[in-house]
Length: 241
Image (cartoon, rainbow, N blue to C red; front, top):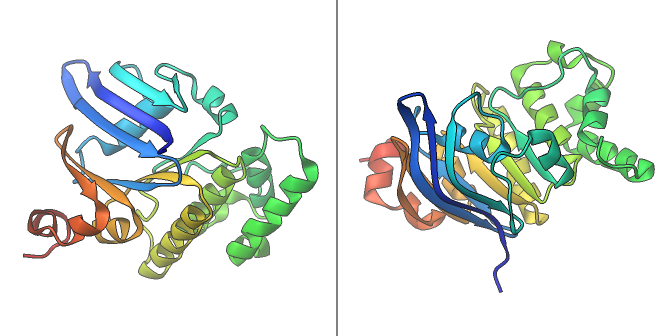
């Protein structure tokens, strides 16, 4: 039986008179890697922020069900206790804390000291650059290093659902490949992931299923590999005729 981790039904988000999200449905099942793709301004980031309660003052309608309970209107800090973690667009690292301190902050809901130390070493092995700079302030890192840190920090909380918002934005091609390598590895370890990403090709290659968002609406959904070969998706998002 498929276990539903996240279900969004008829989600609408309005800033004053501007309707950013216009009534969308999506679901993420346990162990899936789901991607949400679309052009700039489609409403993808707004959708993630509505799920995590991190939107500025606006009107949110519809249902947001996480692990069987409604989280609409919940404070984001409570969601971390429920093992829902998000890596925001722009990384959001604690710039005046060291790499080590950022990782410890990711584990602040845990009290298994040995497990926390083991996880820090795990992510240092995945991202050797972070280990080399463990005592360095996060604000002095490159964009790619900050993205590594933001992902590792989120994973320190042992999330049941990991939301990733544009993890490849502004990174070099080599760094993009590294980030997606980690996304695929984390997914293979059983972490459920909802990925918002502008690099549609890499996102569809990594994902199980996909949703396409345009002007606040879901315009297409289905198997991610099938979408890679869909002429409409190729023309609109993959730069192919």
